[in-house]
Image (cartoon, rainbow, N blue to C red):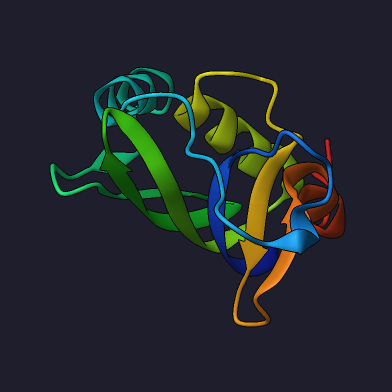
Length: 129
């Protein structure tokens, strides 16, 4: 199964749909503790460290990340690795605690290009199910 490599910063949902305008990005409306608990319950093969770093690997995916939190919310998540769109969606939904992730803001690195999560996920190779 082919997968795409990526490096992104994931932020919360933008109230408007134009993420290209930049500016301050909203946090992901969940706490580090809640995200960590969901990650360990839903993806038992994921490794989570107290500093916010995590890794999740399988036969068709390998993702490492860092959760940055402040003020009881996740300010953003850095994700890097290779993964198909379906597995990436699963990981982000678990971290965010919601299936409503399409309007989340994504900065694609190193280009520093803004996208919403839906358009970023659509650019990845679809899962071969």
